[in-house]
Length: 262
Image (cartoon, rainbow, N blue to C red; front, top):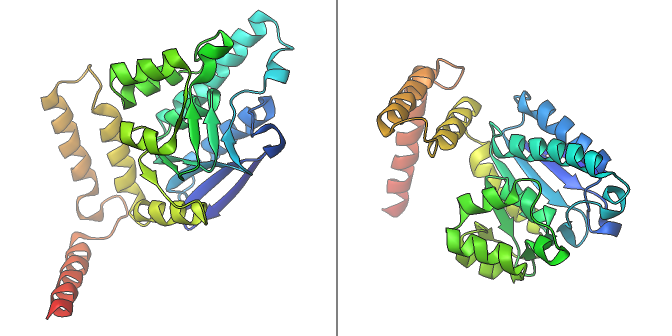
């Protein structure tokens, strides 16, 4: 249901039910939870990429399975799915939704829970739930309000319209557009800029990012915590390279660039 691969410190999770546009069923949610928990502690995985197999990213939940549940069972199911997406949103490592194809309904909720969303020009996105007489049920509306202005987010939710990845990029919902051909290769190359960095520093920056809009902390407290995080890795105390090594590397590269311009 979900195919996995680790490519150069990048963990790739591929939704693999292309015959139903990668609709998420119960088994996939279990596997998604399992691999997120497994890779959370894996020192070889620094970035998580979610993508789809075939021509779709994700069409949301598997309505055939969901329709067989009672209202009480659906409530319990949605709570579990909500928890998985929240764990994804709060994941300690960078998460990237690589939209290889159309993302609608719950597929948009899944993508919105990630740190970044990448797509190619042929991709379409849509929070289409309202056209089915329902609303987002996994937390997607809240993630969307964090990403876009209140007006733009509400417009997408109330209309249920599909928009192109180009339109989504202009809104700020999509972070980068890559060519359709060799799309995943472009995504992995983009992610390697993060995956080549020290894991300790990556984890600390994710903590800072998650705390940035937390109303429980004043700006002064947030900055104090930021300084404390820096002190944790100062001089490579958490296993990273020493500052002398970093400085030597930086100035060597700088000198190489200067020489190259002469």
